[in-house]
Length: 120
Image 1 (spheres, helix red, strand yellow):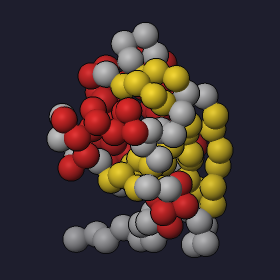
Image 2 (image 1 turned 180 degrees about the vertical axis):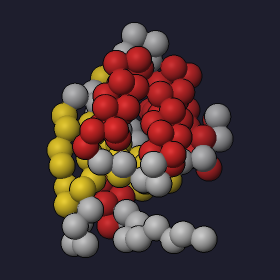
Image 3 (image 1 turned 90 degrees about the horizontal axis):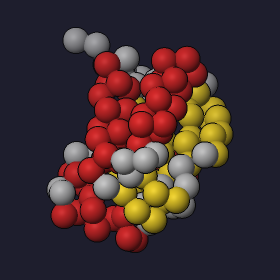
Protein backbone atom coordinates (compact mmCIF):
# COMPACT_ATOMS: atom_id res chain seq x y z
CA UNK A 1 0.00 0.00 0.00
CA UNK A 2 1.37 3.34 -1.02
CA UNK A 3 1.35 6.17 1.53
CA UNK A 4 2.17 9.79 0.81
CA UNK A 5 2.13 12.95 2.88
CA UNK A 6 0.71 16.17 1.47
CA UNK A 7 0.90 19.59 3.10
CA UNK A 8 -1.91 22.02 2.33
CA UNK A 9 -1.20 25.72 1.66
CA UNK A 10 -2.31 26.54 5.22
CA UNK A 11 0.08 23.98 6.72
CA UNK A 12 -2.21 21.01 7.40
CA UNK A 13 -0.74 17.56 6.91
CA UNK A 14 -2.87 15.17 4.89
CA UNK A 15 -2.07 11.47 4.61
CA UNK A 16 -2.89 9.91 1.26
CA UNK A 17 -3.32 6.14 1.36
CA UNK A 18 -3.55 4.10 -1.82
CA UNK A 19 -4.50 0.46 -1.22
CA UNK A 20 -4.18 -1.93 -4.15
CA UNK A 21 -6.06 -4.97 -5.39
CA UNK A 22 -8.94 -6.13 -3.25
CA UNK A 23 -10.33 -4.49 -0.13
CA UNK A 24 -12.12 -7.52 1.27
CA UNK A 25 -12.26 -9.79 4.28
CA UNK A 26 -8.62 -10.85 3.80
CA UNK A 27 -7.19 -7.31 3.57
CA UNK A 28 -9.69 -5.03 5.32
CA UNK A 29 -8.33 -5.59 8.85
CA UNK A 30 -4.79 -4.66 7.85
CA UNK A 31 -6.12 -1.59 6.03
CA UNK A 32 -8.19 -0.64 9.10
CA UNK A 33 -5.07 -0.78 11.28
CA UNK A 34 -3.18 1.39 8.78
CA UNK A 35 -5.99 3.97 8.91
CA UNK A 36 -5.99 3.96 12.73
CA UNK A 37 -2.22 4.38 12.85
CA UNK A 38 -2.24 7.19 10.28
CA UNK A 39 -4.99 9.11 12.07
CA UNK A 40 -3.56 8.70 15.57
CA UNK A 41 0.15 9.18 14.80
CA UNK A 42 0.43 11.21 11.61
CA UNK A 43 -2.61 13.37 10.84
CA UNK A 44 -6.38 13.45 11.41
CA UNK A 45 -6.79 14.34 7.71
CA UNK A 46 -6.96 11.32 5.42
CA UNK A 47 -7.52 10.87 1.69
CA UNK A 48 -8.02 7.31 0.47
CA UNK A 49 -7.24 6.92 -3.23
CA UNK A 50 -9.11 3.85 -4.49
CA UNK A 51 -7.90 3.93 -8.09
CA UNK A 52 -6.01 0.65 -7.62
CA UNK A 53 -8.80 -1.18 -5.74
CA UNK A 54 -10.86 -3.19 -8.22
CA UNK A 55 -12.97 -5.05 -5.66
CA UNK A 56 -14.48 -4.03 -2.35
CA UNK A 57 -16.83 -5.99 -0.11
CA UNK A 58 -18.68 -5.24 3.12
CA UNK A 59 -15.48 -5.74 5.16
CA UNK A 60 -13.74 -3.12 3.04
CA UNK A 61 -16.65 -0.71 3.42
CA UNK A 62 -16.63 -1.31 7.18
CA UNK A 63 -12.93 -0.42 7.40
CA UNK A 64 -13.63 2.83 5.50
CA UNK A 65 -16.55 3.71 7.80
CA UNK A 66 -14.38 3.03 10.86
CA UNK A 67 -11.64 5.27 9.44
CA UNK A 68 -14.15 8.04 8.80
CA UNK A 69 -15.42 7.77 12.39
CA UNK A 70 -11.88 7.82 13.78
CA UNK A 71 -11.10 10.99 11.80
CA UNK A 72 -14.37 12.60 12.92
CA UNK A 73 -13.57 11.89 16.59
CA UNK A 74 -10.40 13.97 16.35
CA UNK A 75 -12.03 16.70 14.22
CA UNK A 76 -10.19 15.56 11.11
CA UNK A 77 -11.41 14.88 7.60
CA UNK A 78 -11.84 11.67 5.64
CA UNK A 79 -12.18 11.73 1.88
CA UNK A 80 -12.22 9.12 -0.83
CA UNK A 81 -11.11 9.70 -4.40
CA UNK A 82 -10.52 7.97 -7.73
CA UNK A 83 -12.96 5.15 -7.02
CA UNK A 84 -12.33 2.35 -9.52
CA UNK A 85 -15.45 1.85 -11.72
CA UNK A 86 -15.96 -1.71 -10.48
CA UNK A 87 -15.76 -0.61 -6.85
CA UNK A 88 -17.96 2.44 -7.48
CA UNK A 89 -20.95 0.19 -8.07
CA UNK A 90 -20.63 -1.19 -4.52
CA UNK A 91 -20.74 2.35 -3.09
CA UNK A 92 -23.84 3.14 -5.15
CA UNK A 93 -25.75 -0.09 -4.42
CA UNK A 94 -25.10 0.22 -0.66
CA UNK A 95 -25.80 3.97 -0.78
CA UNK A 96 -22.43 4.57 0.87
CA UNK A 97 -21.74 7.12 -1.87
CA UNK A 98 -23.99 9.45 0.14
CA UNK A 99 -22.14 8.72 3.42
CA UNK A 100 -18.60 9.46 2.25
CA UNK A 101 -17.10 12.55 0.70
CA UNK A 102 -16.08 11.12 -2.67
CA UNK A 103 -14.04 13.08 -5.20
CA UNK A 104 -13.16 12.31 -8.82
CA UNK A 105 -9.48 13.13 -8.41
CA UNK A 106 -6.92 13.20 -5.63
CA UNK A 107 -6.27 16.87 -6.37
CA UNK A 108 -9.94 17.72 -5.75
CA UNK A 109 -9.94 15.75 -2.50
CA UNK A 110 -6.81 17.54 -1.30
CA UNK A 111 -8.17 20.97 -2.24
CA UNK A 112 -11.26 20.40 -0.14
CA UNK A 113 -9.54 19.67 3.17
CA UNK A 114 -11.10 22.03 5.74
CA UNK A 115 -9.00 25.08 6.45
CA UNK A 116 -10.29 25.54 9.96
CA UNK A 117 -12.67 23.81 12.32
CA UNK A 118 -15.47 25.97 13.66
CA UNK A 119 -16.10 25.58 17.35
CA UNK A 120 -19.40 26.34 18.84
